[in-house]
Length: 138
Length: 436
Figure (spheres, rainbow over the protein chains, first blue to last red):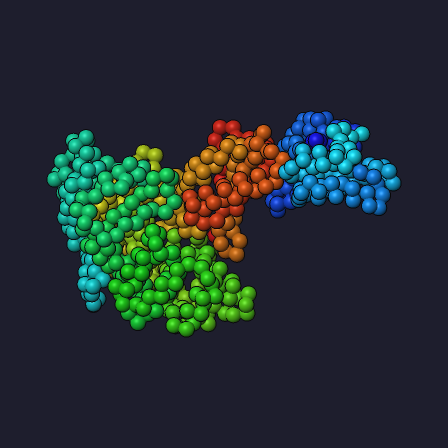
């Protein structure tokens, strides 16, 4: 299991750059970033190697931050690299409603980030298929 | 020579000042005796050692206590009732009150009197039984709809009870049935005109002769603009549910102040701080006593509306004195889309939500001539669980509760904690950017 960092922001100019600046000044590297938008407000979701520190610096800067549990599963970065994991999840009879992928090392390692329910079951189905759920990213 | 029509009470309309004073003395004495039959006033009179029979003329009114909106709440639902509940024929509750509403109960005689006062207002503007009247005001508990409706029927006008909204249908009905008079809020009348102009139409082509406008404050400039756009004459209307509703005061063709029907309402203007009468012509709080109400007389009601009595006689010849436009309120009540809203009502709902921080702002603007209320709240520290759905659901719940509280849709903005200016002492909660 892994912690995604979520930041509540009003939807107005300058809000994203404030997040980016705060993390950049603290030397925190972003692996992935998503924005969910609800018109007047939104949530910025980030994946970083040090979620605890990211949360701390964002909060010190006055932002509203929460953690969200995600399953991060390492896969190979090659065509068909997702097949093994997708099959394992399928065989376990599980659904994935919210997920994305990102590359850690081009041509070598990638990760598949799953959110929502059944995270533990997805992780154990991955383990059974010989894949590795990560609890650390570097 | 004025032709007297008892159906619409024109004998009251054309009384001399002397006849009016005599009538007021009799009516006030009767009203106080009647009020003493209610549990509320009998207790008040007893406690203050007032003998109801000692009140014989308008000068004696100062011996009586004021009645406030809070008193109406405390006596809810029937504490001020003086007759057998079976003889009641109507209930109205006041729009926009905190928690407990205020209820006004009417007997048949009360509804008759209200219709007469209202018919008299309409007749005063020159309207008659040949007119077709489209009522764009809300029906139901809001007194604007039924009040005008009964008055117009009493006068014999054909009434189109269109109610508010649905602009395209309003325009079609006026055209198809040759509407000559309308009742609306000033902002809605402006909205209809703007909409027609946008569509390449001309509001003048509707052929409306008179508009009865009220329920929200607006300027003389807006009246002139509306008159120019439509080619009709605008008559200002003043009323409040505690004094029936509309039909309390209305403009005559002079369009210079609203004649208040002094045969039905005893008028005082007082300093809202000292509660002493102000000098003639000075602005103060309007205080009214019902003189012709049976089921639920109200004595010295503090309307909280600020106005003054216009000095001098009206060229129209009516002796009922004229109220100037309301210049404001002696409390913090807001009028939004014709609905009375107290900031405390909004606060009451907000404070039920623990996900909201203590700070909030009520922002009033206009969009397409329609009042918009936006409530800005802050997410409380520690209440964010990372899920946008949670915030969305909380906002939806707040939206629903606010709509139930005030009766119209309120925009809600959820801000980050600490984004609203911190409140030190008396916070400025209301930002009113509406232009009238």
